[in-house]
Amino acid sequence: MTNTGKLFRMRRLSSANDGRHLFVPLDHSVSDGPVVPHDRWHDLLRDLVEGGADAIIVHKGRARLVPPRILAACALVVHLSAGTAHAADTNAKVLVGDAEDALRLGADAVSVHVNIGSDTEERQLADLGAVATACEAWGLPLIAMIYPRGPRIVDPHDPALLAHVVNIAADLGADLVKTSVTLPVRRMAEVVANSPVPVLAAGGPTDGSDLVAYATELMAAGCSGLAVGRKVFTSPNPASLVARLAAVVHAPEHQADLSRIPSMTTGAL
Image 1: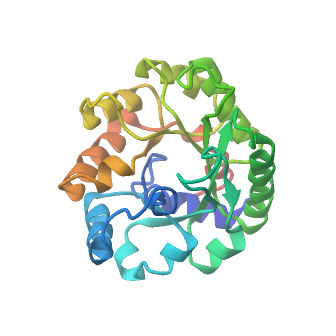
Image 2: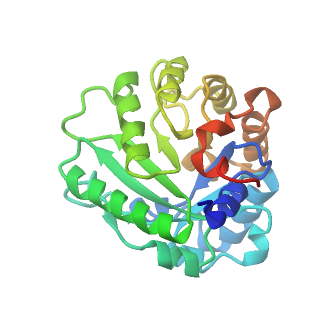
Image 3: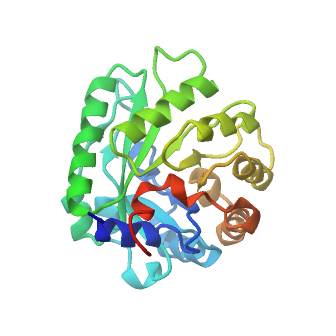
C-alpha cells in the first residue's frame, strides 16, 4: 500500500522535486555549542532559505524557536540523537526524541546518528531500527546519519567500508543516508553504486579546498545531495554559499535516479 504521508514529505525534502537534496544541519548546538549568537538565529535561517536550502536539521527544542513563516519554502528535519564533545565517549549517541515529537512540531523528516565501530554501536543500531519502525507507521521519512567512527575503524574513507555502512542504514529502514566521503572523492561512485537508497555526502573538504568544486565532484560521482553545516553557518555570506551549492546540487546534469528512492516510486507525486 502506498504510504501517502511519506510520499508528500519526501517531496518536500527536495524543493525542485528532482530527488536531490541540500540539507543544512544546525544540530551542532548540542554537540559543540552555539551555531550563531541567539540574536542572529533568525537571520541565519532566512539566509539559508533565501539561498535555496532544501531543509534544515535541528533538535526538537530548537524547532520550537523556528517561526513557521521563515520555513515556507524549506523543509524541517528534527534530529533525534544527541551527544556532546564533553562526554567520556564522544562517539556515543543516545535518542533524545521520537517520531511523535517530530510530528507534533510539524517536521517533514527525522534523522538518527549512528557510529559504526564505536563502543556503543549495538545500542545505536537498535535505536535506528526502532525509529525506523515508528517512521514507517507514521509515514515519516528517516535520514540515517551513519559513519565509520570509533576505535575499530582504521580508514573511515575506505569505499568498501562506506558501502557497508550505507547498506546498514538501508537495511534497517532509512529512506536517505548521510555519510562520510571517500578519498579520493571520485570513489564515492562505488558507494552510491552499492546503495539501495540515496546517498548524501556529509560536510566539506578537510584540506581547505573549494567547497563548490568539492560539491560538483560529489554530485558527478552520483551522490543525491549534500548535508553541509559548519562550513555554511560559519561562512561570512551563508545565503550566497548556499545558493552556489544549491545550483550544483540541482543542476540538470546531476538528475537523480528516482528509482533509487523506494518511497517516491510507489505512487504519483
